[in-house]
Length: 277
Image 1 (cartoon, helix red, strand yellow):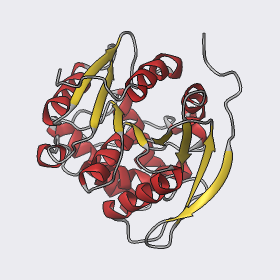
Image 2 (cartoon, helix red, strand yellow):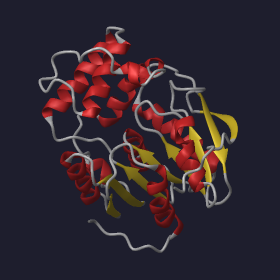
Image 3 (tube, one colour):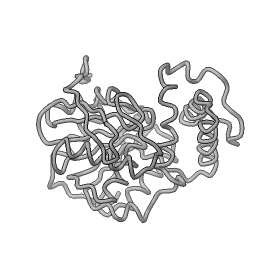
């Protein structure tokens, strides 16, 4: 395997977002700037395996989205504020920095570019929009549980839904023990509401995507559910300059050493022709 055995911690710093919220980041490697945008429950530390593999070609900046890790959490939450956070990080990374977003991080990156953030290119891995009304119902239940202060129950339901084991009706809480498999996530559970806000009603936001004129690569895993791959193709079709790539044998928990060379090729070649798959 080509994975980095000890992911780099990088040079740590903070940048202040427009509303005064401090946003923590870490940077490693040299080359054109690339910002990694984490998905639900992700942090800068979680991006080190992928970032370490890309650091030989890029100056990689990974950051803690607001409410996570070393970043602040000025309220009330608004997607606009997360877009401003990303803009501040891009300003620190360097003009025209490329973006890579995992899951809801990809949806946030698209929202930022649609709002006018200047970037060289964007890559996404499995943006989690959905065509399922039941999934949207379960998302609503997660938000409801968070509003009741029941972070562990909300986290359990979210993780069960991600694993495909949640109650199809979306009415009951999942059985206990899901969070015990991933300790330390309860303190991030409140940020699930932020990710769900980024996704809106869950549908592929075609009017928003039509305003994204950067080059985009949409990637999914060949072993991911059919619905996930259908959404990836729908996102690709709605973007003006996008192409689609499926990684054989991969799931939503994509292996960094499989994803890294695909991103490197896409981001390094500014002359690469782009067309919808």
